[in-house]
Image 1 (cartoon, helix red, strand yellow):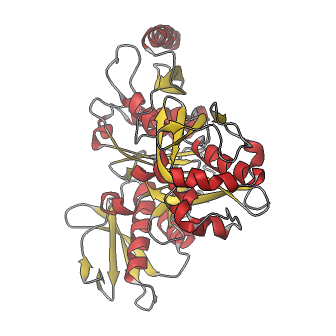
Image 2 (tube, one colour; image 1 turned 120 degrees about the horizontal axis):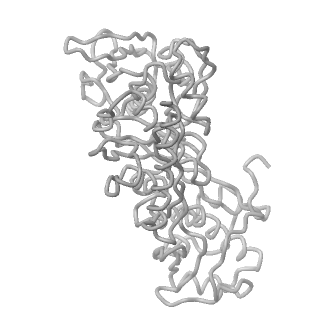
Image 3 (spheres, helix red, strand yellow; image 1 turned 135 degrees about the vertical axis):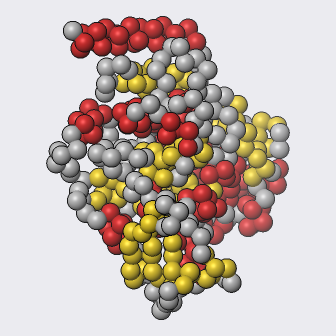
Length: 440
């Protein structure tokens, strides 16, 4: 009888939420499916919605903010406790890391905490390209004993719920978010990695992420104030610069605290004393919040090459910059990057460097503002060069939600063509057929 009543309540909640969503949601906006808990665990309630993505925002950020909003809480069961805030969100290709405030731990039960993570992950999976989601609370792994550790990588909520409810069940592999330095050695970016069930998580994560030997010993330890930390010993003969060491310390800190439940931070030592870099002694416990200056998103731009194709190029950028179309587009006006792919516009370097005046977004259309000098110089471009250059811009911008079309202007006045082979009277849309994989 109780089971029947639970299903009846769930059906009523479904009808109420769908009716309320249809009445309250705008008809337009970037499409997303929001997932909410129901009384019939572990079933989730999908609600179609639209996101109004503002400046300096990503679709993933808007989706999470919309999900945790409590303004219309009568319509559905909210996934997060009242007061929960989004501390940060990091995106690297298909991987998304969501960091919620400590208020999220006020969930009424461990089941509610489990379903909160599922709702966030399933909502983000409804966005194009998202394949792996890690949900943190105040920079640390969720305190979910018995639940599959690490990231959510698929929509099988029922399968994870079965493991969650049966701690003795056999576990397979789990997915951890491994943080690695970017190629230029400025930031750290998340990259999913698989771990075998039953592995010592501390050792496994250090070994899989230790590209250049730096750590010689490690152990879990309890401090006198009750905090649980990982104590890491650094090789005094590692032969790395202080900048490289600090970046690797930040990467390891974010990796460990994001995967191991109950881990409060990391202590780094060398020769029995705290690690000292550039005259600063790192005697405090490092946490994710102390590494925020290094956390970056990974953006993808399409660079024309010497063979008449567009090649994906991935770069690490601070999250604020990665969400600004102008910052992303600026990469495509870097002569050294274009030269590395064998593409030569034939234009003077100073003309290309000062060509991009701005990028504005109105609805789902972006407008690229180019300098008069650059537009004048482009009159000499061949049709093939013009096509590669223009669609490198168009394909790059249309990767950024909600942009689906691109217009062009010289300063503030619309232009109809660069060299004349492509009409720019209307918005240009994505041309995926021009893109070639990096390995092709």
